[in-house]
Image 1 (cartoon, rainbow, N blue to C red):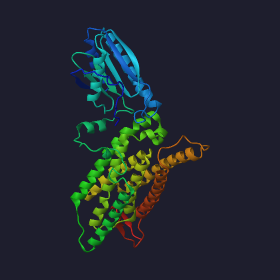
Image 2: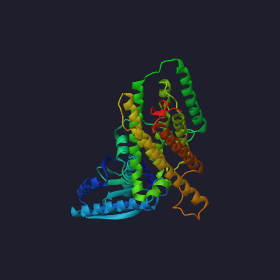
Image 3: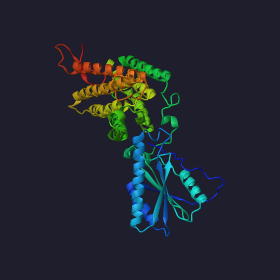
Image 4: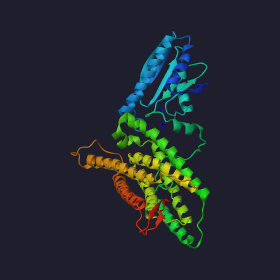
Length: 445
């Protein structure tokens, strides 16, 4: 989510003017044109629009490249043109003045000949201080009884994110510290190597310890808890997938595949937060193995290795800020929506005919993953060390994160292919099928 912190006009010195203001949110640009026109049409004096238009952004967080800057500026100029045209159609004498701005905030102030400069500056400053422009494309109208009117709007880098905006507006989300919404190594939970390694070692000790404890006991059913666990992960994966796609697909559409895969601009604050949520899911998924141990199901190597290593993979990519992460994560989330629904349904006794295709989906997922991450890694190393080799450019992220991701995902592909062959080919005579750690039958050796 883009947060605009405007720096357009300095606070005037020694100005102490009391102002009474009203702030109205008008929605997006198209919805805001009519009410602003209606308000300004009530003036008995000629209207002068003072408009700030973005021409340069000093912060990479606001304008990632010239494409974004051009898009913001174009929409600002189009809105100003439509507003002037609409006022003229109402018979209002309206003129405008364009002023360069160094932020993506487009501020339009409507003043009359009698407005003093001091009151004008004070009203702007008070309005900016009182209004938090942290939405997507949003138009705010600030007015007071005696003085200028201030319609303004903040334009986003990408398209609107309706699901994210809906959750922020209506979901009862608690106020949390900065380090829980932004990845801060050492402050964000599970963000240092000693803590991560200790947690995963503790996970391995717990599951094998439970297996030993359960040897002389009856298996626990835990059906309700197991179903709740799987509903949370299936629904959570679906919501997170939708949030990530509505953030990334506009960038893919506007700038093309290479930009969306490799440009460091796609590592936005929103995406970083989503990566953190996905990372936290990996620790919640460790409970899968706890349930298996308590049910006295076999703890297959693939299951244990995949669960623990994936948490480590997400940790490494957060540290490396690999721009390509969203592709791997989105594919994984899509599979998990179906996979955890399958576990939920079968725990209640349902017969699912498509369980075989879950493993097929995972294999296809890893093939796509490897194509993407190999391409990104090649792009980085070719651009950095061998500029004579053909490449589209570099790819954001660290070398360590890239190499670790390539190696681990490659191992996943071979392990899942082997699992598929062992599980779904006809068991040889005398071989008894058993259940692997994911609850899918395969033969013993």
